Length: 190
Image (tube, rainbow, N blue to C red; front, side, top):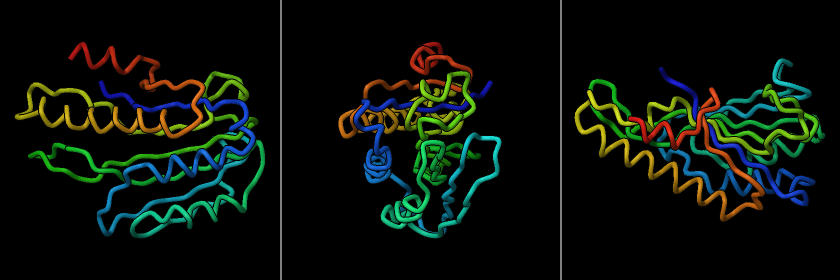
């Protein structure tokens, strides 16, 4: 059964005051796919995840973080969330293994924004990276060369997690699946 994999990041209290600065650092360090022809989407939401976006704008071509941040800067508020849906390169299997773009979403939540989790807004994470389905990071023994290529995907994921922790004022982080399972224990069972 596939599950969504994400990294949740809680910032130190001082960094929460201007959460767009750490979010910009996260966007600048993220290894977006350099492939031409991919479309990304910037969206801004208010209050909670059930409300329609205040803004949803497609971006064509390579990610220009300065452009993305200038869009976000126009919308301020403690009940606002910022989201960039884009791509990064992973080994993917579709009749054969290929290094290709995999969907990813990076989000920044205001302290009063309800992001749909069971936690109260003030206890929710400040930043989140949605990596898509966990099967991109779990060995698939029925597929040829799976272990080696999935290991490469896992190394990319873990390198990013450590870079986030080093570059941002992280108070706490958690890498888990949507069902709440610890991702590391899932890796050990396959």
